[in-house]
Amino acid sequence: MTDLLHEVHEQLHTPLPELPGRGETQARWRRLAGITAQNTVVGRLYEAHADAVAIGTDLGYPELVSAGELWGVWAAEPPTPVLTATRSGAGWTLSGTKPWCSGASMCSHALVTATVLPDSPGAAAQKLLFAVNLSSPGVTPVPETWHAVGMAASDSGWVSFEQVTATALGTHADYLERSGFWHGGIGVAACWYGAARAVAAPLLSRAAAPKASSLLRAHAGAAAAGLTAGWALLSSTARAVDDDPHNLALAKAQAFAVRTYIDRLAAEIIDRSGRALGPGPLASDAIHAQRVADLSVYIRQCHAETDEAALPAVLAEHGLGWDQLIGDGHDTW
Image (tube, rainbow, N blue to C red; front, top):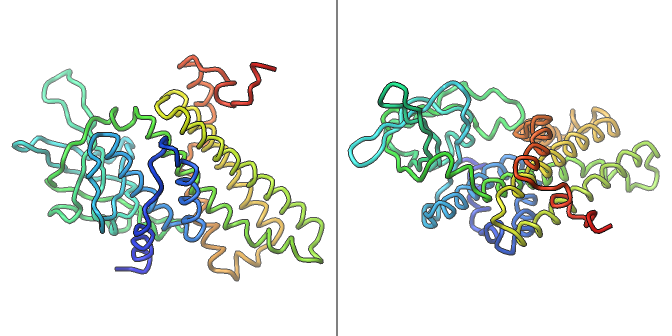
């Protein structure tokens, strides 16, 4: 077992607080942030495992994940390559290649989406969600498919499946059309926040020195203000999730709002740290340099302006008002 994998399993010994919407959402997101602040890749793998537990519970399989296992959630669906699922007796087998599989050579199990090809002309393909034991014959991580410098240790390359036995848990829609899917997306933003907090640490520390320059302190003050607002947003959203956990439309809007804000916050923290401190920490502090590289890649799970444009579209589609999302009581002013 690698040091990284050992660290993930050490973190798994301490269970997360309850799933989102059960009264402990803020504590859950705080723990995700704290783990990721220590090690970005450990936080990434830990969050995916926690999400697998939540998905299994939401879909009626609360005992899906057992102690000692590490689960990934491999649900990327680009046009190519395609992983297909075929009925095999009373079960299913998977064949093809799945891209962007975090923990490809480290996870013991994964939740995987796959396409069921139509069996008649004119019929539509269907996507299902499967549980897979990655020690099964036919599962092979594909070498040289993850070239990122940031998040390199997450081993998020492609995985090949050749007639691999799998258990169907539900349709792709069952997976996506859950409040928990969107709450889980906010949990990822909590991880980004934790990593950004760690990236900001050298800047905040230097700014507290008696002879710190006014320019350095200006960048530190802006970073601290952003972090304060970011955590306030996560905290208030956690309370809103606990108050109304099954509101799917609101959960979508909350996820887009929080993720786009924390994405921009993290990018600003990276930028201000570099501008204020210069190249020194990036060149001489290996841990800080790796954190910056990791976070730069990690936040690209956010789809940037595409997600920002999706926020008002979600409100319009579901007949929600801005006041319901923002929650400042503006409609009573």
